[in-house]
Length: 449
Image 1: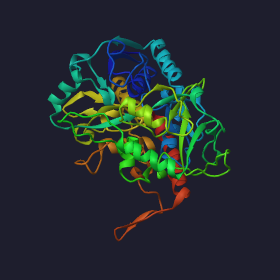
Image 2: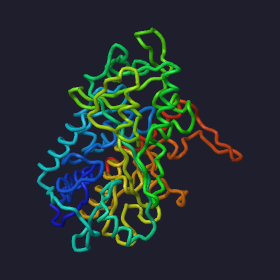
Image 3: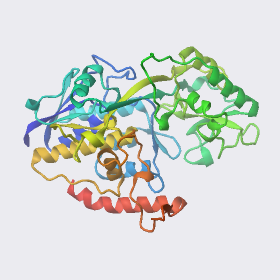
Image 4: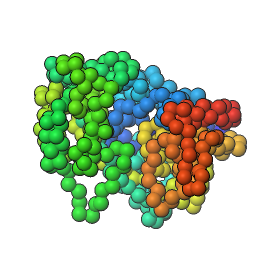
């Protein structure tokens, strides 16, 4: 047993995964968590690893999707988050969605019952001192102002922010199935995975008009909101063109309305949000509309005229640091190497990405404590591609949060850049080739963990 202790600030997805990787390697770990004494604007539960924006970890197809590939890599290396997600999954077609309360409770139970992990329920308001030994800051995109202040004082202006929005959740019993129906796109997964609310052409364009006219949450004069492109508010998407939503969350492809026998012009999908299937999440409908406007506008959707909302959408500010400038390859702050960072505060984006960076930070810290050489993940894996984005991003000046995607992987054999033009393997063959290579290269790294 290692006699020193690693301190982790924050028990979100990244902090929970980091703590698990340390503890299971025999390293004593203390988690500092400000809940339940204080909550961020978006958090409601006292449990660890609370899912805020959605209950979906997105695609679970590891052969053709970079997110699914990251799921599979995490499973193979012993991720706590993936173990709990798989145990608490609910139907969602080809996606991995979970009962968010059961998931958070399971993560919390596993952490609190591990003999190498202890909790201190307090808000950390200063940078962890050297006297603590190694520490991991995993406070997420909603790091409290009390901790952001000393971080900013130390790193100067090398921090950024963007605004993230949350989708509403509807009580399923309030949905009108005289208009709505169950179906996944192209009938993937179980037929009950998604509930669909259809619109004809006139209803769709009227809905877009109402979105554009809806009263929104106002910002202070000094705020310049920048939204993450992968999680735009529905009204922001609509403002980019009246047909934009038809190619986004309201696309009707792969669906047939059994009430008419035809494909709808547009559709709103609702995904299962809890294991009992009493709650449904409005897929892609994150919003910054005021509460009253959300109820008024969303109840114009066919099938949701009498919708009762368990949670309305909201908006919050996400903070991240310029990791490629500030962190070394082992996620240590270059100017204070006893501090590591993990999770969305580093500029990764998404639940599974946050957990993966937490895994890496915990693994690196464990190696340091145990006197072992840490091995970087192969660049060709999802782990390695995300790690490279955080520590070796080419476009540092325009550094932005990034979901895992095949665009940040190294070229596959057979792909070249000729005369400045990119030539690539096309379609599903390309994605499958990337995933096959990643899982093959993962094997050697996995043996070193």
